[in-house]
Image (cartoon, rainbow, N blue to C red; front, top):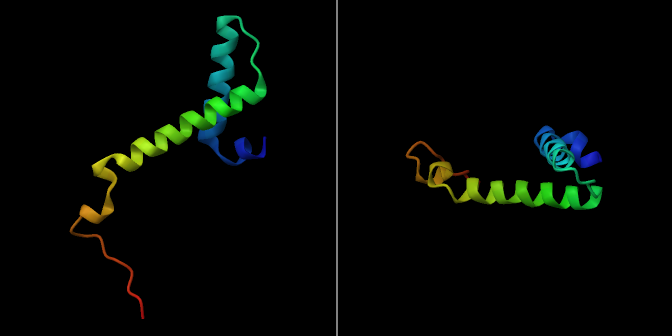
Length: 68
């Protein structure tokens, strides 16, 4: 649970997953819930990284680090 305590987005996704399982009448396996939440968060990160609007190298105002 330490991962969830440190990341509000992960905690919210975990609780939403558990709530959805309860609404369906299923009992949630906590390990499966954690895996499903992590998979969902990783997929969201990959989509965000693939979005060209998030590519800072395309910006004319982006400066590369200077190596001295």
